[in-house]
Length: 325
Ligand code: SF4
Image (cartoon, rainbow, N blue to C red):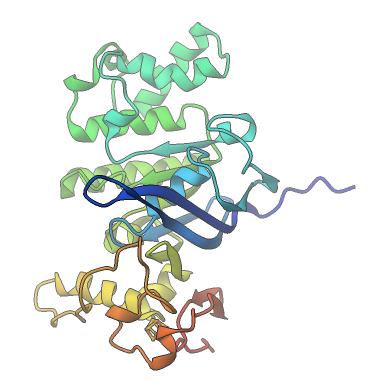
């Protein structure tokens, strides 16, 4: 029998996740917030899938579901062909998935020397102390720090250096999949470019698969092979970088791109999104984007658009999206 591994590193199948929230002045009413609503996609081996959308659209929840930091309501997550939906964080195959957060302090203990923090995932995997020290020194050098800096504490580093340390910690076990959640958003432009280049260099070296989450389309376009766009817990478009930036099919993606290009000198005024994003506690019927969509028709108010293939791997959830020839 062939033992060939599947082409996909990760497969997210119809995943949904909701949270209980308290409402009312004294929290007397309880409701459910559907943070991720029937989301499906794959990430190929060695591929970087960018994930964009406004704050609160469910991007970070999705990453935490994949990393097994949150339970699913329904659906399945397959890692290298095996379901990991029943596993806790760092259990079994989930050990081969890692995450880089926006705020490196969330993964670095301020009272622990950075060498110990970087070594922690290795120690948890039972790697002997001497081998841990050797690999930490090697990894610090790879992320542009000196091995001697292992003896310092997180507060003795700049924001960009702390993110390098968080990257070293995430990569020390040679993961097969990494989720980067707004990993460069808190950095200023020049440091952001350095960290992105470091990240691309690491990917060339280790060939890991990645879900790269950002609200910034330019950043996502810089590192991704394909891009997924999320709105109010749903995936609304998925395409290669080239397809998405040259021929976006969903009106929400079109508005995001127009807003991003309007920030460039001499650009035209952006396609303005109508109103504010609706509350995820009370999502609109039909197409969740319809209250803000300049192209909305009557059926958009009642009929949920299917997330459908338009051709060439380009998919979108819009009644009006045309097939790509
Ligand atoms: Fe706009 Fe209708 Fe398409 Fe939704 S389905 S994005 S409301 S045109």
